[in-house]
Structures are given as C-alpha cells and as structure tokens.
Image (cartoon, rainbow, N blue to C red; front, side):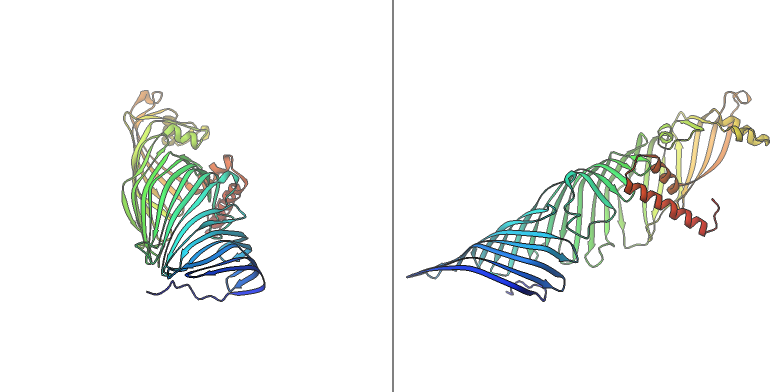
Amino acid sequence: MPALQLPDAEINLTNTSLSSTLRGRWQAGQWQLQHQGTMNSVLTSPQLNTLLALQLPKLELSQQSDQPVQITATASLQLQQLQHPQLQTTDWQLHSSISGSLQALQLQGELSNTPGLTVQYQAQLDALTKLSASWQLADIFLLAGNPLQDSFRAWPELLTLQRGRLTASGQLHYPAAPQLLEAQLQLRELSGFYDRTLFTNLSGQSTVAINPEQLSLSVPQLSVQQLNHGMTLGPLQLVANYQTALAAPEQGVIELQQLQSDFLLGQLSIKPTRLDLSQPSQWLDIKLQQLDLAELLRQHPASDVVAIGKISGQIPLQLNAQRQLSVSAGQLSAEAPGGRLQYRNPAAAASSNPGMKLVFDALEDFHFSLLNSEVSYQADGTLTLGLQLQGFNPAVQQGRAINLNINLEEDIPAMLASLQLAGKLNDTLTKRVQQVIQQRQAARQAAGVKP
C-alpha cells in the first residue's frame, strides 16, 4: 500500500539555529531516547514565506523487545507573518501532542492565529498510509470581530458580519472513505449585510461533503428574521440542497425544498423545484398571498396615494445565464371584497380633457370590487403593471359603476435605491447605493434616455 502522497514543493530553510539536549538509556530488551530542544529558521517556498520557530519540549522514543518503536512528543510551531496567496498575512501557532507508533500514530492539539481563529484537532495516522482527523472550530463571536475575514483572502468581499455566533466542525479522511472532507456549520443570530442587503438574526445549519469528484451542500434548516433591500421581508425559512462536480462548482443542481417568507403582512413562497445551473435559464414560480396594500405604501411612501385591500397572485420569475431576472405574464388580483384607492393630484385633476378628468375624479375615492394586474419585469429593472379596476366613487355620477384600465411603469432598482437612502444606512451601504444610482444614470444617458 503506498504511503501518503503530498504535492511536490520546493521548501528552503535558511538562517537555521538548533539547540538540543539528548539523553538515552539502554537495557537488555529495551531502550529509550529523550530529546529536548528548539529550532528557529526562515521557511520559504514558491507560495509560502514565514519565520519559523519550532520547540520540542518533549520527544521520547522507546522500544521493548520486538514491539514497535513508541513515540511520545509535544511540539509547538510558531509561524511569524505567514505569507501565502490564500491567507492574510498574520502569525500562526500550532501546538500538538504525539503518541503511538509509526503503525498507529495519534496526534491532537490546537491551531490558532493572531486574529483569534482557534481550531482543536485530533488525528490518527495508520502505517503512514491512512489518515483520519476531526476538528472543531471554537465559537466565533462576531461582535468582537471576524477572524475568518482577517485570516482568509477568499472571504466574500461584499459580505460583512457584524454580530452573532458561528462554529464549525468536521472530519478529514485520506484516502476518501467515502468522503474526503465533511464539515458541519452552525450559524446563530447573525446580523450584517451582503452587498446592499441587510439581514438580521440569520440562524441555521449546513453540512458540506467533498469527495475526489463531487461537492454536496445540505441546508436542512435556515431562518432569517428580516431582510431589507429598501423593502423588508421576513421571517424567512429555507431548506435546500446543492450538488456539483468539483470541476465545475458553479454549474450544479439546487434542490429547493422550501422557501417562504412573510411579506407586506402576507406571505411569499416558492414551490419546491429543481434548478440546474448548467442550463441557460431557470424558472421560479412565486406565490403571493394576502399582501397588504396599506403596508406596501407604508414601506414605499407616496404622499398622493392611499390604498386599502389585499392582493394575491402568481409571479413566474426567470433567471437567465447572465443572472438577470425577468417576469412575463405574472398575475395579481385583489382579494374579496375588494378595497379602496385614493389618489389625489390637483394638477392632474385640473385636466381639460373630460375623459381624463373623470378618471382622476373617480380615483380620488375609488371603492373597487375587482383589481386585476398583469405583471412584467424586464432585465433592465423596468416593472410594468397593467391594471384593470372595477368599482365606483360615491361622489362621482351618483356612484355609477366605473371600469378603469391603467398602465403603470416603475424603475425598480432606482426605487429600491431611493428607499435605501431614505433609511438609516451605514457609510459602506450608503456608498454602494450611491454607486448603483450613478451607474444606472450613466447607463441611461449612454443609451440616450432623458432623465
């Protein structure tokens, strides 16, 4: 059986100093060798550079009769200002105790660094051919800082965690049996923001399994108290799985088992579905139930509009290969018994067009029994609503029934950005929102669209 194979690497040790004390004892049928010492050196390789200090306060080799040689040792390794393309430059420390024989060697200890990352580990190496290890990440309390972000360059640039607690544990097997790596992650009441979206009290757990060919991610439970991207939704619940080939990690399959959230005093949900990210387009069927129009206008204030009523409907959402969203033929309808719409615009009501004046007069206090809307949304962020209204205004034509057809258009990204700026944002979010507004304005000007 072959020994453990490590990638070829060129490692250089320079400026090395060694201090050691050696003692031994030999008797018939047994022997013992003890060593104490320290070693300091500068370690460099094509991807690694650090000042290395190794301390061996205890190293003992012994053998009785024809039994395997026994090893007992404690070691401390200091890596000062460790530099690696995947790591932030900082100091690392490794403390380990070693016992057993070369046929069955046990290791346990702690890995830590200056930002505060601490990992306990236990490992067994059998005959130098089989490695099994488990590890536990000490709880990270994010109010005191994020040692993951301060340790690894791969931390998502747009993700900021401000409070909450997270921990992780895992197992490593070589050769894979059946998985090469398994890890469990627990999130507890995380708050922060991703890009321009605030989240509060995100909790859940996930499991990652990696074998030589495949990665799988399971999220059996995830909840978020609130998401805020200009408008708020939550609490939200998610259950999902993801599987992909390691050779194409972004082209896997999502099994969405549950996604639902409170929204506008009603509920938003997506029926269970399978999303194959290797395909050019994905579809999600969004179900909206009992959304409250008054709550909509509370979150999206309009000084000249008041609305009462609840709406429900279906929104078929398409995600294209460029990760752009669009909707065609979405449907919304008011719940019985209808509702009330008040739109007062003195300038519009003064129109000289009799037909338009009738419409605006009716909308000043419109009691509707029917409200239907066809919904479309373009990849550029334009939302179009084709409204059909049936109802009356008690003060217009003695309350005669009136049918209205109204088309509304809204730039959703611009609207959400304006709502975000109207809220209380930190400096980072404010700059990101302002940047988005400037980019959209520049794009519209380049396309010849007048402000």
